[in-house]
Amino acid sequence: MPEKVSIWAEGAPAPFGHYCNAIKYGNTIHLSGQLPLDPATGRPIPGDVEAQARRVLDNLNALLQACGAQLSCVMKTTLYLVDLRDFPAFDKVAKEYFYFLPPARTTVMVAGLPGGCRVCLDAVAELKVPEGPAKGMI
Image 1 (cartoon, one colour):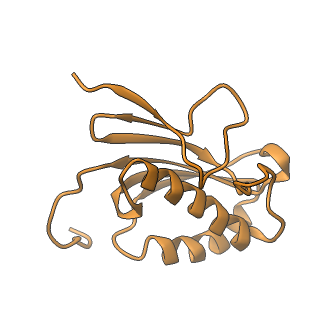
Image 2 (cartoon, one colour):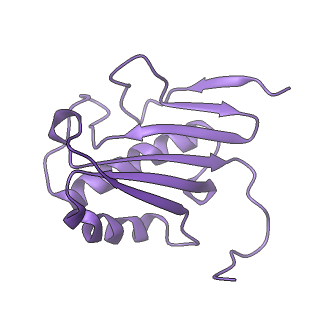
């Protein structure tokens, strides 16, 4: 039976509360919601939604690397936005990070996020992604 392992990464900010940045169970990785926090200070970065999206995706990538994975291993994300009008700005940045076959995604509008952040992203990834070229729509 696989072991449940808690994942922490120096390149990602520490959690705010009593939870892990990520849990690895077998080949599946569940990544907690990542806010646009500077890993060195734990504080939200300044800037617009595009800047915050980059920080969120960099934090997510640092956690994935600590698990031995990469962004191409992400299967599903949930995007939390304070304002749905920010969706195009986030999507523009996400296309730079998920330039291959993008993961499935759910987007949710929320009343607020910690520290006045405008965006948060959680994810589920698989360590072993099927080999072969990524397929488009079927």
